[in-house]
Amino acid sequence: MTDNSPRLNHSPRLDHVVLWVRDPVAAADFYEKTVGLEPLRVPGFAAGKDPFPSVRLNEETIFDLAPLSLVEHMNMLPGAADSAGHPVNHVCLSLQRDAFDALRARLEDRSVPVSDFSYDSFGARGKAERSFYFRDPDGNVFEARHYE
Image (cartoon, rainbow, N blue to C red; front, side, top):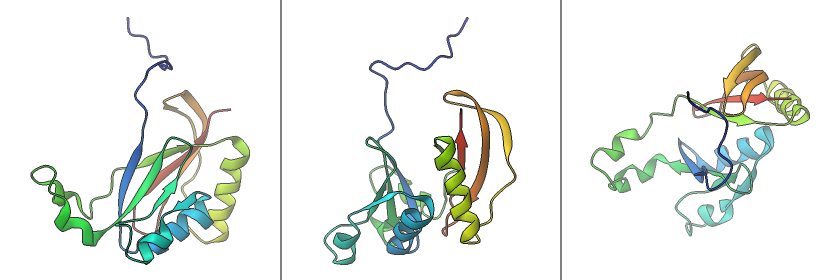
C-alpha cells in the first residue's frame, strides 16, 4: 500500500523553473502585471549586469526568464542547449480562491485566451476544486488551480 499524502518534513522543494523567452523584459512585465508575480533583477538584466531576470512565485520558488541568447552557454550536460525553444508541457500554479479568480479576470481583461474550467483534477494536494489553462507570450503553458 502506497501512502500518497504529502511529505512535509525534510521534503525536497522546488527552487526554480527556467523558461525560455524571446524578450525577458516583456516576459517579466507579463508575469508582473498579468499573473501578479514580483519581478526580480529586471533593471540589472536591462543594464547588462545580470544574465536574465526572474519573477518570484513564492518565498521559496522563482521562474527564471532565460533569453534564447543563452543557448550557447547551455553546456552543463551534453545536449542541454537543445532544450531552447521547447517549453515544458505546463507549470501549475496553486492559488487561493480569490487570487485564482483575480488571475482569471486579469487574463481575460488583457485578452489572454484561457481554457474552460476543469473540476476535481488531481494534483499535489489532492483534488482541485477548479482549474484552467493559459499561455504566456512565449507559448509556455500554465495551469491555475485552487483546492478550497
